[in-house]
Length: 274
Image (tube, rainbow, N blue to C red; front, side, top):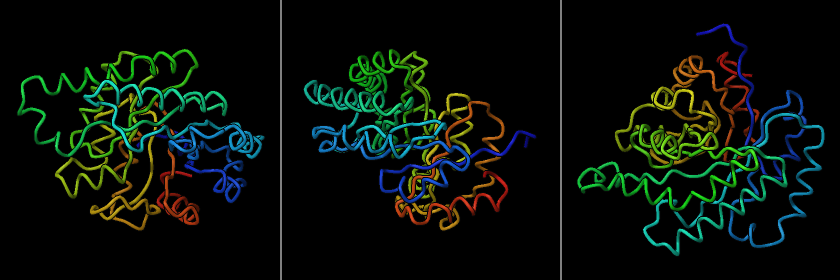
């Protein structure tokens, strides 16, 4: 452990969550991840009135601000050029929302599946071809992110080997692409598919780790429970975090927003965050 100050917890919230927890967010100028702008319906409707109301709710907020990018219905490694064009358009729409909301980070989903963990290396050049398809999808998206000072962080979903995602992010050769960790996804993959434990994901990413979704699970499903309700070994995660200096955003991403302060209080009692 180091003598650095304890990290400050943030939260993933939509407008309703911001209304409920605004005082907690502003109390320590906590990082926020805005989660109202990732669905096709939200992006194709006029999202600006909602975004304007969200900005008003964040008046006085000086913490870091991010956005969960689009992900429903697609992967970033599609074989189909027409699908890649749709994915590209959706992610560019997400970056447009980021610019409007003053967000300088956007979460996107990793393409690596459980199937990939068993099969990528059974086919000649399959791993390289996956990376190439991601590059084709993200080339314009990365350029846009660079131009507006926004960082894309690639979140593990089914990933079994965290090094795959770290290598993918590095292959894009841009300061605007880094790594995200979802603790619940990692623990599910550890228990159910033989992936390494959560702290190994931190060690694999090192200084490329810029964002973390904090959520607890039982190892069977993607619960998004408050920390303390599942079986993640939180001290090992924070011990690993104490050895890196990238200052990742620690975002409580909980299904029941009413348990946000419960989860934060649990981590405070452990003495690992505040």
